[in-house]
Image 1: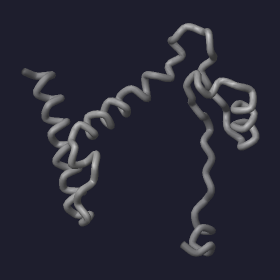
Image 2: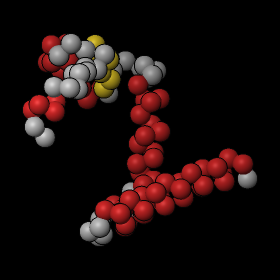
Image 3: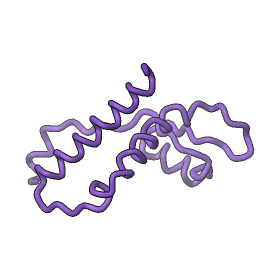
Image 4: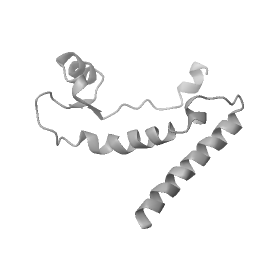
Length: 104
């Protein structure tokens, strides 16, 4: 990618950066603020309920379900189209099992 291509894209910064208790330290907070974002990092020793886990949990759950399929976890296929087909099949199976458990 040449530098001339990057000039047409506006540079965007995150307004808010979320992190769990592992990132609670002043150097992390200062690094986020220097880059022009607002740090929303969970503090150690405080009770849960900050709302940080409500967004992350569905993503982690979906990724763990995708990795239950060994063929996707350890990529054996060299062709991209086959790998993408198996990814779509796994996603369809996850959606079907989720809908099946909710309505049946």
